[in-house]
Figure 1 (cartoon, rainbow, N blue to C red):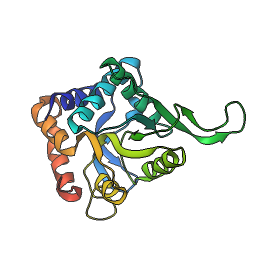
Figure 2 (figure 1 turned 135 degrees about the horizontal axis):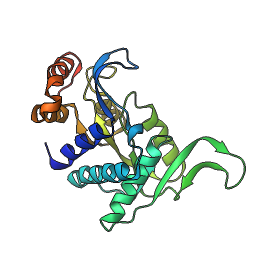
Figure 3 (figure 1 turned 90 degrees about the vertical axis):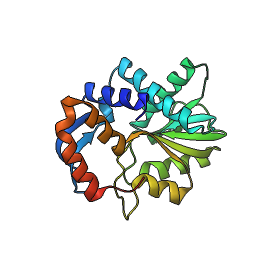
Figure 4 (figure 1 turned 120 degrees about the vertical axis):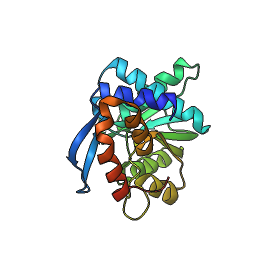
Length: 214
C-alpha cells in the first residue's frame, strides 16, 4: 500500500466517509463497510482528497488535457483535483454538467471550460457505470474525447457478471479506470491499524463472497 492510499483512508475515517457495520447496498448485498464521498465536506478535506487523487494520477502516467465532473458528486471532486494539480504547477481546465439544461442566462447543460482534447472523468465510485456512460456522451457531444475515469474507491466486487463494475466499464468502453484505492488496500489498511482491525474478518468474508481478481 502506498503513502497516498494510507492518507486517503486516514482522511476517509476522520471525515466519516468510510464507516464499518452492516449496510444494505442498492444491489441488495449487505456490506461490512460504506463509503459516502459526500462527507468530504470541508475545504481542508477536499484539498487533502484532491492531493490523493493527483498522487494516483501520477502513478498512472495517463495523458489528459482537462477534467470533467459528472453532476452532482463529481463536481466538487473534479474541482478538488484541478486545485491540487494547480498546486503542483499544472493548471488544467475543468467542466461539469447540470442535471437539467438552463434556458436562460448562459443556457445549456455545461458549466466551466469548453470541452476539448482528452477529457478525464472524475467521480467517487463506479456502481452500474451509468454516470460514466452519460459523461462520455456529454463529452463527445461537446467536442472532447474521454480518455479515462478517475475514482476515489474501487469496491473490487462483482458487477453484473464475474467482473467488477470498474472492470466492466473499462472493458466495454475502452477507458482506463484509475482508483485512489480499492478493497485490497482497505484490507491492508485495516491490518495495519488496531482501531479498525476488528473489521478485517468481515471484510475478508465479503471479499471471498463477492470479490474479483484484480
